[in-house]
Length: 327
Image (cartoon, rainbow, N blue to C red; front, side):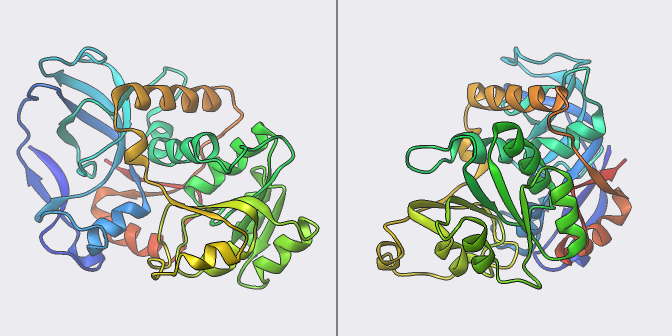
């Protein structure tokens, strides 16, 4: 048996219930893993509310670390006793023990502890595919300014550090002076408190009127319009989340009027749709974390039984860095 968080219907944090579930043996291509720590992410909110609809009842959570207890037929990259971490479909990480597909589970290097492993996989792999794989026409080079919204969040603080290591001038936005200071401390070249300043005007000021080649945006509805206006001609708007709500429909013609710009909507799970891609991306993440160039900041920890409060705080933007559920 395992304690697990499940929802019977979509809705608010009150739908999150801790229940006992039975856990069997892994089948072909699967593992059974006993978790040491579980990561909390905004996609979990989307699953709970039904913004990203999934069959119910649903055990939620996308990220965790732990020890492999058993492996099914055909699994060759893991064995019982291995330390491991993952960001993976299907949901179900809010639990003590689970059986799951092995494809996206990676051996956790000895240099990285379980808490860091649980806090960094989904957010770190997201930062990896954004900064290394989701690039504007002609790519990015050292010195280029880029705009990154929600720079003090879990993905944002990793991106601030990684962008600095790559030589980019990251312009980070956040909703308070404290969050802006945190982003600056983690490597952002410039910070903008969008609760006090017009970020479009500040980006134009910072870039001498040129704008940026790429905007990375997980906020969605609230930042969309002005983000498009921050782009250089042929620039790239990379949307990867909807923290303020989904972007409303728009006429493609506006992209031409704003400088023949590109728009893409990215998801991590497209990037990690194969074992080879997952491992290659994870290897880059493990290397940059083990080197100390990127430090994973864990600012909140909640016992599994306090999962409702964890979701309330996440939605109220009271969190910074990464958040863990402890077991």
